[in-house]
Image 1 (cartoon, rainbow, N blue to C red):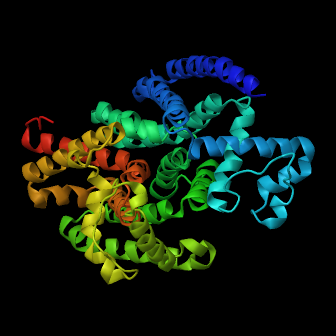
Image 2: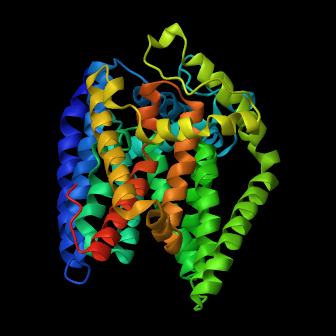
Image 3: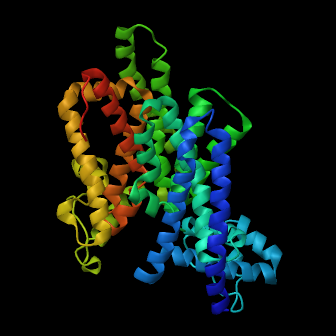
Length: 446
């Protein structure tokens, strides 16, 4: 049986990859004449699939297993159960996990991993579908999952492009080609599903609430992408919601023609947006269980202390001591944001993976500092508050960086967990650079 799976992994991935890229090139050719941004489509999808293959190889030969392989290996008991009792298989796929559901598994089927973590087991169920489509090949499953995730990434790129077409090349870099995002957001991992879901959420939120295109598909994908985030990584939904509500009310202020009145009203609308986001989260407390706000604070404290233990062999950082209450957490918030946005730095590097992430972070930090200097702090924030999309992108990146920097003190986890914020933050920096170059008539030079 092992020889069979090895043969499948040799034969199917090249076939699927060729078919996928042939289709992509054909699809690009049908769109590019009317929509020039489609010239990035095939290359973006290729980068995504190469990232998926790289994750498979790294987890197999470098890490000797891990989350990616466990998710895939868990599909085998699922499909043995389908052969043995298809009705039971459907119950496992569509019912909430629990002792009654998992009683269907036995020594013949074996037991899937993560059955005691319903967020991770939800990923197992999704991967099971893609494993079937991929002929039970590890690499082919990863390629198909990456291609599905790319649909959300592509929507995110086209969304940014619709607002800032003059910087299409920079936006392609920010959204489609950043190495850490391509790598960690392409394998059989939670992050692959999440970055696709965030792309779809951003695009459909804009369609439904900003452009008022309340159609069935847009509404369905907005709800579905929100559901995916809540089912797999609820804290991502927490990070995107405040920015979304501020984006919505900020867009309302854009209709106020009187500039002085708009400047007076906008801060009030921002406060209303934050309050609205808080009320939405507060109304969901009963459904969120361990991801209730108070529980998140407790988990953050425990996680920070655990990941600084000797078990992680010094591959960690410290943002300072804090307790599970808001005043204490606000006291370390600036350190959490910096860690989630810009660490590891070059001074933190201990291996090749950290070096690649540190080089990216160095560029982000230098570009941020240079824009603050060139635009001066006042104009830097003026541009952000005048552009609702720019404000949303920066707020999401900051909220997300804060949550990751607070809950994670291990560099290995940080490099992977922070990737959803990078396309938004780097795109925002490129937009600010565009504003600076228009304002000054000079090139920034970085």
